[in-house]
Amino acid sequence: MAKKSKQGSSKTGFAGDVRAMTIAMLEDGDVTRFEMTVDKALGLARLRVVGADGRVTTRELLGAGLDLPALPASGDAAADRTARNAAILACRAKGLTQAETARLLNVSQPLVSKVLRAAKN
Image (cartoon, rainbow, N blue to C red; front, side):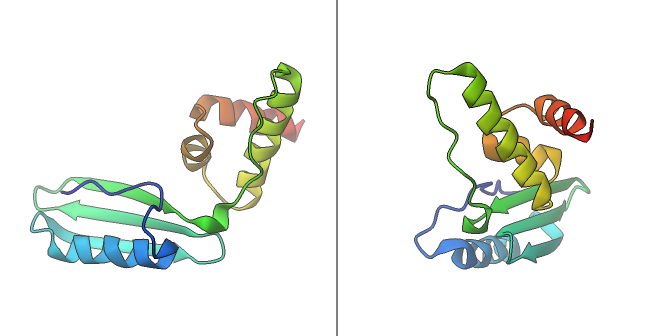
């Protein structure tokens, strides 16, 4: 099965990236079945692929709908942590999973879990 991008990168935007991903799945001889779920409001496409060998792979395509505040690198560790935690909570509010949030923000999934647990208290 061909690897797919997690981040949208084409010049045609999110819709073009989803279209390209669909075409790639249709043309890939190793793919026996695929399911795509697209949330246009979030700009998130989830693709579940079943290969000829029976392996199941899941891919995400993140589009512009997931605009989050830029994470500053101010040098002030407390301010940077606060901004990062706010971005994690914003991702959760938009319905992203912990793994998706971690990939999007380039942090670990256990850190995302820790911030979400702390926010509940």
